[in-house]
Length: 292
Image 1 (cartoon, helix red, strand yellow):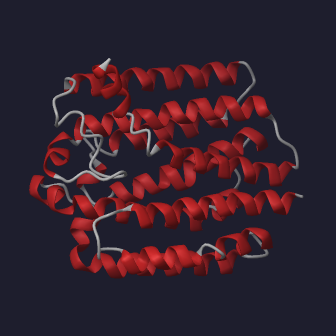
Image 2: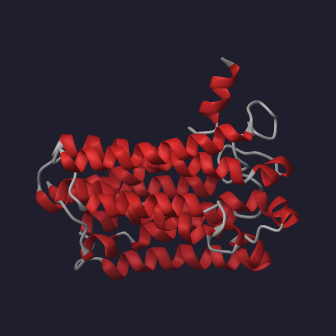
Image 3: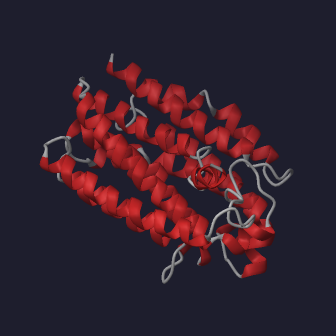
């Protein structure tokens, strides 16, 4: 039973709700686009998305054991702590990632064959699997090359919402992609907050995360990205973003400012994670209101 609980912990259940929020945002955007909601494709897409998400979590647990051994864990950073504690063999994480990847492909193919998902879901899942796997796994190891945060933000801020959107609309659109750019920036900002507590451990093992590369300049980068995200919201209002979406996102500005002020002043990534979650939830509500 202890090993089973440890295996489940490696799936990082505290992080999974972020993916659920991102997928829900895409569903809300799709609802706005077609003014209807199809539960079958929504549930099929959700299952595939969560399995794909777990692939990245287990692969990251396997690849990051050295850093996770050195760092101080928080709710959203430092891994699950299972492998550094020796609760299960490292091979459990690797084989879990492989098996879940096969399951994600099988579920996607089956859903497309049954007509629950459009063929466009296939390449979205494929990109998600590649991005999640090579975020930390060799030979690419994007998180070692200063590209991990961007890769992760593309997964959580673009691909996951696009998957939800596609289940309702049938295909991703340029409008949806552009509308998600502010969310992409907010997810990127969150990742800077998540990786800040790990910076010393990352540097010790040679992992060049964006936070490690930027050094003290990461504070300025954080503030610039927050400002740019909200300026982009204003710039997209009317022709891309409906007014209720803009209003909902602007209401989250105080939370983002609080996260920006506290960033790097304390080790917790919670302010950054909360700012991202509130922004995604607010945007989802705005799209639903705009559809009414």
